[in-house]
Image 1 (cartoon, rainbow, N blue to C red):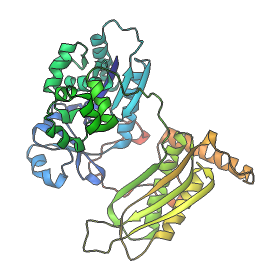
Image 2 (spheres, rainbow, N blue to C red; image 1 turned 180 degrees about the horizontal axis):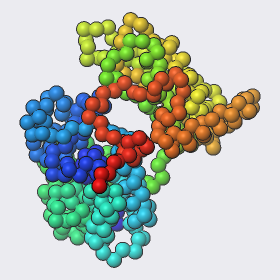
Image 3 (cartoon, rainbow, N blue to C red; image 1 turned 135 degrees about the vertical axis):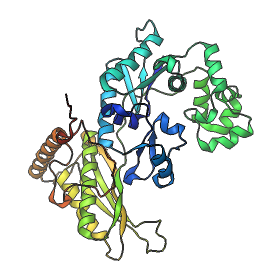
Image 4 (cartoon, rainbow, N blue to C red; image 1 turned 90 degrees about the horizontal axis):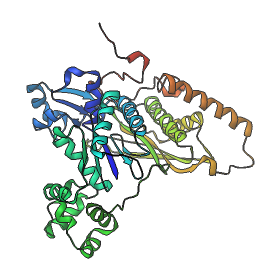
Length: 420
């Protein structure tokens, strides 16, 4: 059996943990620069607020219905996700983190007498220890488990846990489940599905294998088999290191000075190195890029980039930050105003598999390694940006977050305050 633990309206739920007064009230969370709604409470959905709706288009609904609005607080969300994952790992032999708010549990071989009670217990434990409501669906395949978790959200009487295994129950659910809501069915497939007369997950499961292979290739065939109760999608509790790593942002206001652009890109580079070090990798190549606002069609447009190479590979904060700043100075053109910038590591190798040059400066490399370790330790304890390089300025990304809540769990200065 497989289980899927899915956090309900995750970003909204994270905000409600520290604002219990918002339970039962409409809440939305906005994307970078307070642009679009990326998370909505059930109450906000009922008001007709769509996913991805720009704030300026729904402002009347927000004001008329007193919708609480938050800017995306991703430091908080990442930490709350980690806490939920810790609870899940304490309850299952193996956990595959699928996204920030979802994780699969491998229950094959686990000694569990009552899977339905187990699902409800895990859900209740997550709520008790983290404050996050989690829907736990259990089924013979990962695809069916994902559908079972969705049932928990639709039917509160399931109390956060659903065990779907009997053929008659699976058929009953699939006959009503829209095919476009099935995990693994993309929008590009909808025209073909409509042509084949497929509207529900059950319709898809009843197609001939020949038709599935002909029209939907291997991923579609795997989904078809999974809907029929045959596990085909591997469980991956080991996360492969990323081969490309990018950190970029759009700015709340356009940048027209080289110093401001350098400080922003240097901060992005520092964050990228932190991610690189976390997966035990080195980068051999980095692209630094910046672009103007493509929506301002009446203004001059520009996209510039600079490629920096590190022949011996590096995961050193100082080396990468300095190189990113230098690359930014080379690409900067005072004739343009820049709206977005970032860094991209393209050639990434595992540290323990890379053979450096015999002529490298070993002593300098060891010194840089110690410095990076100290930076990681301090920033890991006291929060990102506690110690930074001068070229980063104050380390603040020029983005709009007018409605951002405190970080609560990741900054000492923003710990929750309790009044008794």
